[in-house]
Length: 211
Image 1 (tube, one colour):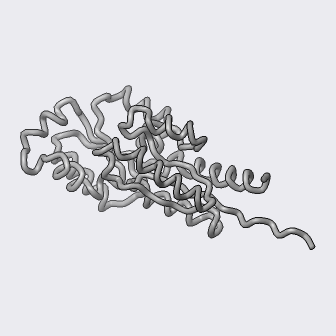
Image 2 (cartoon, one colour):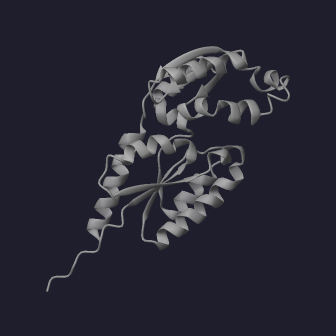
C-alpha cells in the first residue's frame, strides 16, 4: 500500500497589525490552508523593544504546530534586531526598512525623499487611525505646542494610498491641515507586497514537496 503524503503544513505570515487589512485581502486569493496570517499589535511601533520578543514567541508557537513562517515587518525602530533574530532562525522577511518603502518601492521612495526630505507619510491604516496614533498618541491634543517640536522640520504630508477611497483622502487632507503641512497624494495599491507574498507561498510549497 502506497504511503499517504503528509498534508502541506502551509505558510503563516507574521506581520505588523498595521498591515492586516492589506494582507488579508491578498491571502484570500490563495487556496484555503496554503497561507494564513497572525499579527502583532500595531501599537508596538511606539514600543519597538516588544517586537522581537513577540516575534520569538509567535515563531516558536507556529513551528510547534508545523507551520512554515515568513515575516512582514520593516525594521520598525529595532535597530537591526529583527533581522538578527530572523537570520538566526533562517526566516525570510519582506525587504525594506518600513512599510512606506514596501508600498512605494525602493526607487520611488528614494525619489520622494530626495525631492522632499521633510516628508511625513500616511498609509490607509495611519489615516484611519490618525487621531489615536498621532493627535492623541503623540500628545498633540493635550499639548498643541508639541506640534512644532515633532513636526517643525517637516514640509509635507504624503498620503501613499492602498485603496482609492474619497473618504480617506478627505481625512488625510484634514490630517495634513492639523499638522500645518502641505498635502500630497499617491495611489500605490499594495506595492511590493503581493509579489512577495506569492513568492513566499510558492517557496513554502516547494520546500514541503521536496521533503
